[in-house]
Length: 115
Length: 108
Image (cartoon, rainbow over all chains, first blue to last red; front, side, top):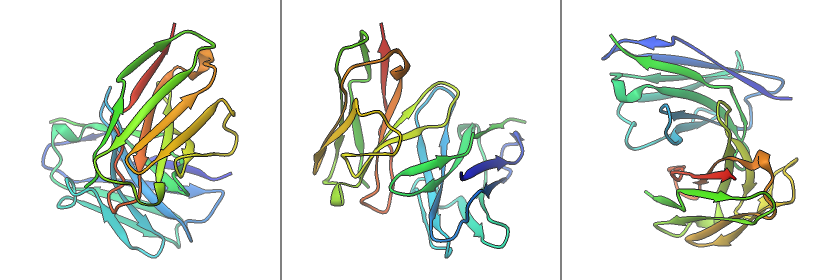
């Protein structure tokens, strides 16, 4: 059974860069798309972007200038970097595998932006 | 970029009743690439339906999806108490895989 686990800082200061990692176990990152999604507290889901295992990416146009998603096939993990964080970026961040929809999700990690 | 609108915002029904949730797209969704998810409080979303009408593995058959083009529907045939959740649609026929704002289903 594929399992995903997000990791990273729970607290980020305004203007700093968020770096999150998603470790994939029970399966390979190869031959799939992988995505990052976020959810502000009490609000809906926002697609951040996705990456194919070959490294091809696609980003939400509203975040494209600040976001980078990468994949490391040797470590079987993917990463998210989001620059110039503000309070509006406070959210639960999820990674997920794409297979005709996001079929496997990590539990999510809450990231709070505060000084 | 395709914008998805879901209605109603909140649906309050009794167990055994039928729930009909709507997802409308601002442009036609290519190949009916429309997914439905269920999210319960404190949990990650769960995929229910893909390609508008194909039920994902392990999903009870009371959940069904239909529609094409710009209008899609998720139907829960006979509501169970555990169906209380927020339901989201997502399109992936374009380069932006946007989500709808969600419909909250409350069980009376």
